[in-house]
Length: 466
Image (cartoon, rainbow, N blue to C red; front, side):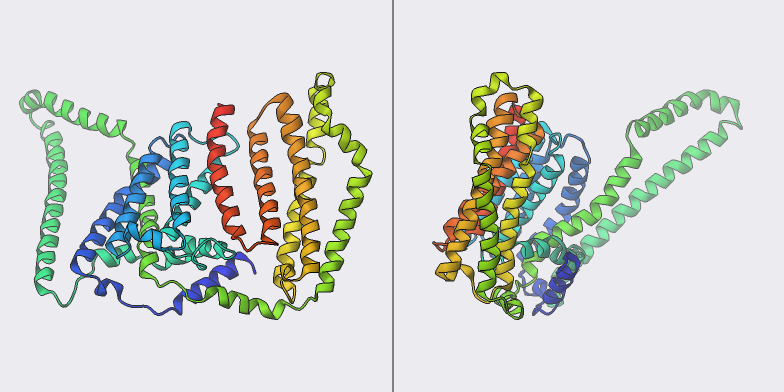
């Protein structure tokens, strides 16, 4: 199933959910708080556009604190206080993604975007914030990070925010039909704002009319021009210099861009609480997979057995070559940079691809096998052997990178990024081996490790490179 089809399925699923007029069910205090946050979202969105459009987002850390404060205020206002986090299964995710959001934003504020890491930093800090909102409000499909976490990311990145895209305007213009006194106060307040806006517009128009008349009259009377011309020229010169020093075009562009960003942000933060969470999605997901689960266990023995045979053959034949590879640090003085580069790079990504392919095999049998492979002793043993080889390949790739290239010639941006990926792959292999024999939340810990280790990478990059 491709991404567009999955998004369409999620949107249809959310549309079928039972909806209530949540704004009407809120009390006056909750509606007032939401309206204030809706107004604040205009400023927050504009600041976001200004900061993210800068090559060095120095104030992103402060903006992240403000965004998290807004999330906490909305959640607390709608009956989800921070103390209730302990009662949720996603309390670990809440703390992890909140702290990694702040830590990554702080790294961006201090050092800006790292070379060859900037795009991943941009994606990382946004993904952490979205996952924080999901965890904070207990919106994970499986109550915590699980096999459907990617569905949650798609839903709360696209479906829910855009489904509630005009929620901010609904909140700002909402009036309770049951409270006429409040309606009257709100109408009076709106009329006052309208009057002030009209007065401001009138003052601007008057200023331009006076300026036009003034410039024309100076050409009629020389005495009038002599007495007032200098002041007229200095006044309009000062106004022109002010607007020339301030990039009005840039301000207007940023202001226009901030409007949809603010609508998306409010749709995410408040919309995730207005829209009901889908029920029994995991059970539905399993039910949808049942028609595809037709391959008997013999197919697993064939595929895994064939792979393990070629892996074992590789280690037997290449044993002597790997022995010289493992002792290469003793010959460091006799190896040129080009030779070290060839040894380290040769086969590195091939080893990574083979390790990733093993995860692909595991995912394929999760979808298509008639029975879970870890529930049967024989197939579980086969999977164990498969991921032992995967772990060995990850270790070998790590040795090529850390033990040869980085040890002899130090880190570079690409080497650090590759090293992070290798460590994540190695941890995932180990978690998979543990999961085959013990019912742990392997996906949960794997995603958390990848997020936390990437955050550490942002600081390690600054320490080793900058």
